[in-house]
Image 1 (tube, rainbow, N blue to C red):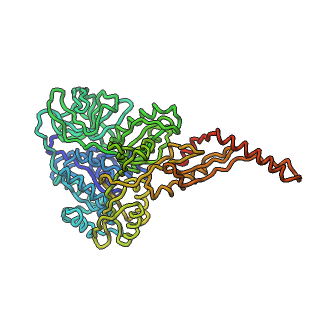
Image 2 (image 1 turned 90 degrees about the vertical axis):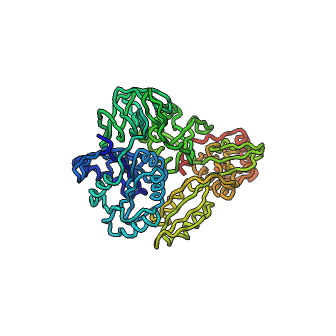
Image 3 (image 1 turned 180 degrees about the vertical axis):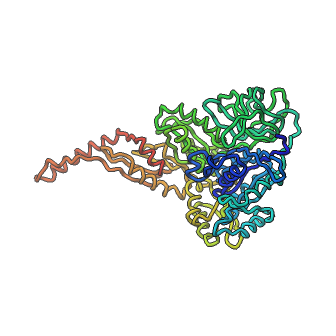
Length: 596
């Protein structure tokens, strides 16, 4: 189709504002899917996405729409995730579009992630079409949503379309607005082929399947093309688009999105944001995506050590589909061979683990999540540490810096005190507060990243009865009094349980871990001491009682000294046993503690 009749757009919004429902409606209205094939959350193809009601991957779809002016247009839609951990997925989708539909829930209004996603779209100079969704809800407040649109995002309220994806209200207006307001794709001015790879996945039969957007020239089977990043030349075997299932086409022309398969067997050869060009062409790369820096690190180990190679291959396939995920091999005394993996956040970590278990059938265990600390040594060198095992001895450390994040929390007025208390409990400080409207405020604060890892998001949701929302961005490093907390079992440190914590919180953390270990370590023939220590100082202790034989059972009556003699003899034996006995911690104990 000629470029003037093509429109590329994506849908952006805060989590749960109705993006996927709207994309279902658009597919149905344009006749891409018949009523018989229609089902809810059609584009959320993963079981995980349906279960949790969230979008994890961006999904491309090509639709044909006959506009009121009688002409037929090709609309390429990319449905994007809304959660803060997947903002990288959103920025990749936006780079393949000229416009974006911004969905705002009429009942909830503008939320933290809405603001972040609009900034992403503005940065790429996209045309933003605001849509106020869910106007059919009894507690919908449309005037309020329009006011917030103007006050917070500086988008004129009269440009917004009022709709309800569930009831099918306003769908035609949205389609007409896409055709009228979003510009048609324009060539970049280069001579040869230029196509951007914005996603890919691994197919057992076809090898690597890349999602592409053509910016110049055309792609068709039989062509030889070059991947600029790896410098590899491959032959295109098949091109096509999605509706939502892949279908084969003769060619992909200027401005179209779709997929290509070539004889690429290894996931390492394709890089996200890579440019595909002609073999003879001298054109440079398209502006790709910035290299992503993981925020959270965790070790992933196979429960059965024989699965190591299998896990390695599956991590490669997963990385192809989720380029924000990084990994490298590491070993642990307690858990054997495994991988140190980097994630964008805790939900990302959870989703990757779940996908490994479900899609690849892996039996895995993950260590406690940690962040990257910068350690300044006494000799002036700077070392980055993401694993407590690599932290140098305290005598060689001059100072430790921890990563900070700037968080934006939007919450109803009445919860402001509780949210501030939560922020100070997490060692954070509120920078300033902004009143968004009569009901809500936005708190901007600076927090250490490792404090918001575990339960910060959940706590905000429970404090604000689900009305609070948060977004965060990296804000450099700050010097802190961080210490390494070691767990000693029978006097020996167990590396899987060590962690880097703030000195003020070390004792509480040590007590909790010691209490948990006391439950899971099996009893031995002698008393086992479980201690939490910072350097040489023990801050918490629990004792697992010994299994004892009642040696005085055969003494009935008689002199007490006889019983005492037997007990002393038993005590000597236990002491000798303890001096050369070692405690084997079962795998189940590690799993229990790491789950806690």
